[in-house]
Length: 257
Image 1: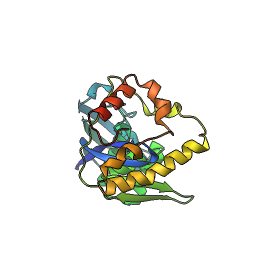
Image 2 (image 1 turned 90 degrees about the vertical axis):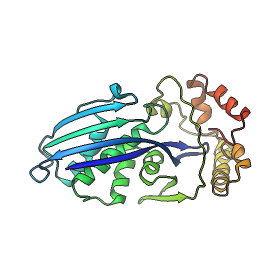
Image 3 (image 1 turned 180 degrees about the vertical axis):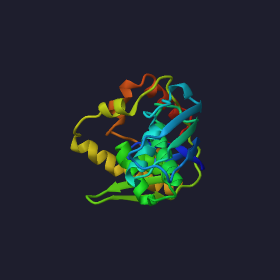
């Protein structure tokens, strides 16, 4: 059996929407999975795994069971209680790794979708979504990768509530550093608590951002995309970022984050 899965790059937060707002982009990773003997295997049996890679950062991708696409797929195999005896994954990687474009989220989503499709979709879309969020640890990138478009994710004590946001076609310009900035390092830079004024600053701008995007009121984006929750703490860790943001604003960008 052969399965092709295409997953988009994503950008998260967009300024004030920390850990709840994600946007899918027009850049895609492709995973081609070929599996044999699905019916003969159970979750306790090891899979004869081969992985090949191509594209952006291909030599950086693991080709054994530590590969993130396979690890996500293995979550489905284990939960369902069935796995292929033989599995070949070809990863066509177009999303730069460690760049803030959701490369890890795309890998997780691809692995979950590949495994669920190979097993004839025993898990619902909601099940896959919960696994993706749990695996990644935060919703913004994986939910945008699953749904496409602009997505708001809200959690209560029981579950995640996902709200698609209507968005006219946008031109997004991505500026990448020439070094990796892993998610773990970016999150480690954040404080455990915020001043009340900073919390108010952010939660007043998020609804303004959503309204401005929905109505194409781009004149408000510069104000709406301001942030005091994460960007001030990460800015010193990315050399040249402040200058790049200032250059974008000077060049006429409606909003920068």
